[in-house]
Amino acid sequence: MKSMVKTVLFACNMNAVRSPMAAALLRAQAGPDLRVDSAGVYEGGLDPFVEIVLAEIGVSLAGHEPKSMRGLDVEAFDLAIALTPEAAAEARRALPREKIEYWPIDNPSEARGGREEILAAYREVRDELRRRLAERFPQFHQKP
Image 1: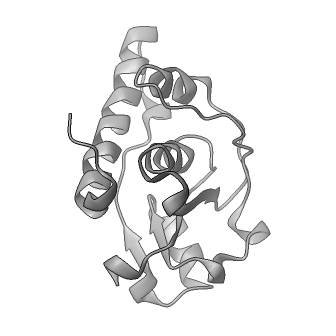
Image 2: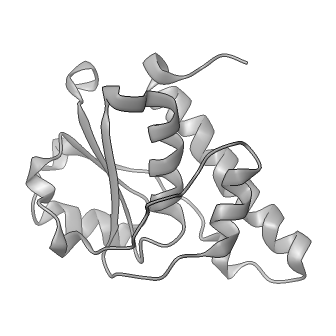
Image 3: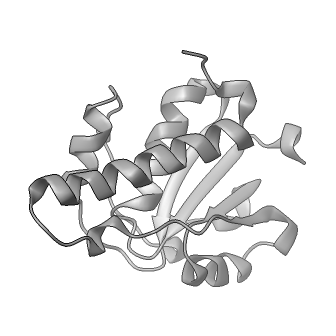
């Protein structure tokens, strides 16, 4: 199954933080070799902290428009990576379980404190996603 994946959907609750971040990271690595998209159980709004921490590593969120899974043809994806339990449940409405992976990723938008503490939480999520993506899609991982 892993070698057969040509389309990947990342899903979270609002399509504002975790799923667009994961999609942008994988898209930057895979380029045109893989179709990558993201969606939420619900449609959220853009989160400026995501853009900041992605820009720090040269990844762009340009063109991302938050959308819900109900507005997508989820069945067209080879793999859905759910980043929340709610997104996994929504993905199971359209895909068989073997096409769904669940990666429990903390929500950095729940971080409290000043700007630097909040950015640190977003960086932790970014770096956790990068690690998981390198493990899951080693063919696209660029060595430093």
